[in-house]
Image (cartoon, rainbow, N blue to C red; front, side, top):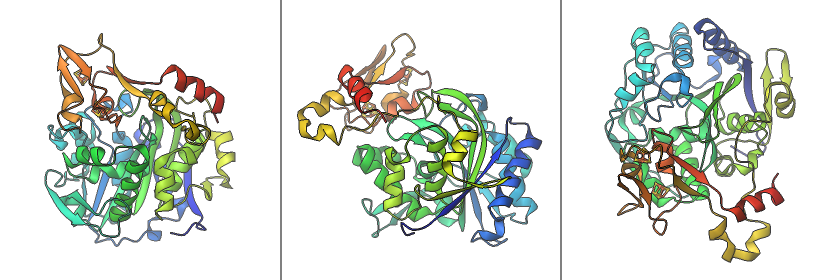
Length: 392
Ligand code: SF4
Ligand code: SF4
């Protein structure tokens, strides 16, 4: 995809998860985007619906793709004659069976009703990817490897490493089990991790992206943030454009999101030239932000300390955010330890969880996977001052 490409994102208002409303919104969004005929899939295609199933949480926590959105996409595909469907995701905690998480998140019930089986996400296949910018191989879930196409049914959420997680980052669940943790260890900065995600998008290349932005997650995402009514369904064939529009809607500059930047550089899509298609016609992302956005959405908007502070590199360690345990909330379950990708672990449990900051690579997997909202990511005083000074 060249830098000159213009990408379309359909935006349809939807103020609740009432199934009829969600069905109508998803159907309308796909229709105004040009219909399923525009997508490179045949009726016989073996398709995998890929929701966000990060961890077991009820739908109202806004951590995972809402069952109503998943059902709307499944029904639309089936009604249009795409009946060779499976679904699945490889969640963050490799110890728990993926289908069990689908059950806890309410997706299994609707998938069973629709007759869409859970695919093979408990087996991985090593795939060489010599054209990758930073990753030359991946271990991908078998179902994804065998599919003709992925339908990415993602969630609008905040993320501590990448600021947001939407369509681009949701492909990470195509990576099999424990290999996700080793990817975090190997690509430990936000930028290198984003480049790996860019490579993964070029490998997996979902055919369509449907974003559940009816109730998004703000603040301490991607698991323990606060549900936030945004009232939109977004649909696009370009994951970077859909994430770019998400940024506009929450008053975050798209170029501050490493996954946007890397994926655009790597030809996955564009966050720069987006046409927003609504039921009332085409508008710009800025107009969409005015009409449908929320400037108070709680997301990290401070600049990374690259420009002005490059000259004072010795300050950088003092500017880094770090994960912190709230002991009063910690139940000592050890999930954070399981999810830490560092050899020998940078966190241990001794009644409650404790960090070894000398080892910690600041990947925030522990924060992402803690089920008790016991881990937050804190900025130092210097970082907070720098944020205020260079805030965008
Ligand atoms: S910090 Fe969270 S994940 Fe870690 S032991 Fe405590 S409750 Fe469990
Ligand atoms: S302790 Fe947490 S942030 Fe640090 S390396 Fe381990 S998982 Fe990543």
